[in-house]
Length: 513
Image (cartoon, rainbow, N blue to C red; front, side, top):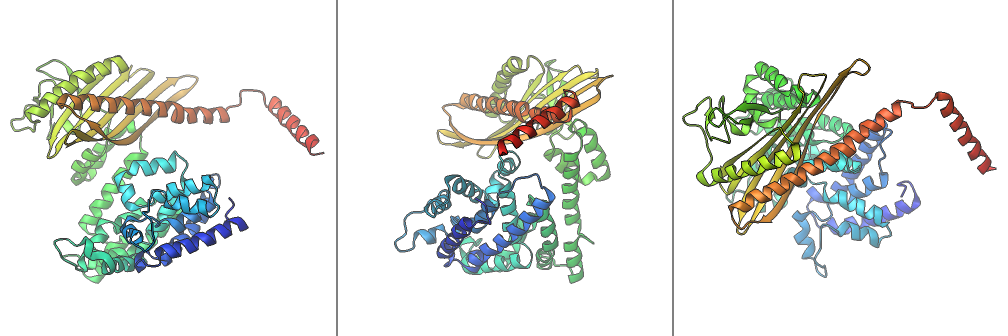
């Protein structure tokens, strides 16, 4: 549906009345005025992105409707709507879709708008940021980034400060800590959420608008900190001219991550060493946050190879999964409990078989550690091909999981990263280097009869995830590269291509007569 058509204007008018009816009783932080501000911001961002990315297809009708309806079904206010006289129990996952269908929208439009509305919120993204990024980058929901940015722009700057204090005054008592209902609760919210929003913007237009709006938020936060700086210092902190040590450290850490994402994953270790030599205080944070190609070491006790990572490191020593000893030796090194160690041994035996069947070689290691309500672990797999020769390649899989016990069930959260490097050098081709990494997440509840069930459950999760990621690499990433090469390289003579175009033009002209 064209967002300039009379049909759309009629639908939009009806949905505006629906929004006013649903939200007129909300406090001013989330009332219809907020929705219309978000709509205006979304339109401005859409115009900017269409200019910057003319080949990207944005659906203007979806953007405008999703911005208008993005707070319908907000769980903070749903109980009030359900309690209204004559209302039925409302399902926030289908409210928007049903409302659009009832007013004449097509099923495709209604479904797409509902999907975007269901994934706009800050809380939803914090639960699974990889899902939001995948929806925008791979699944084609480019409108989601526009609406998210518009909603977050209305949460920062002077308007965002006003909305934050308004929400506290209206319903904040429900969110008090230790029964305290103070203005400081709102100021704490700045650090918890508002100052983070600029870094979560998805569009270039939204990021620039957020950069301009952030000053008021940061000045207010800094001035009302436990040890507030002078007003000039607060302004300098907000504008970045004279940042405090904490602000500078955060900025340096973000910049380091941003830089590493743009460099060859094959050289991550070298790049990390270079960055940490310049800013040593970032060493621990970077080592625990950045996945790097796995290194191999031989266990002196068992004479078997194992993989090194941050999860089996204690200082400068690494624990072998085969002997449970540190190399170099460490007297007080952290080791898993007896129960978790037994699980670790069983998992290493199982994944050793998995490695041999799927990788036909390579090296694998599994490390477990204790948690308060369960345990966690990492499964590492590495396969290299002829390193140092003209053709070389490496595959590194890093699967980190948490298992939380819940009666006869266990909740698993798996985060998988694949680092792939392929290189070739020939006289005809020259140097070819294809490197990259990919991260995916999944959460699932599975039945547990005994500790052995954990090994089987994690094994199935890792196997399924690796199959999906391998297929995605093959079909999407390599497929796209092949298409690009095919478009750039002409296999037939140019004269044949010109003749085909001329024939096509003649056929079209004859059909138009």
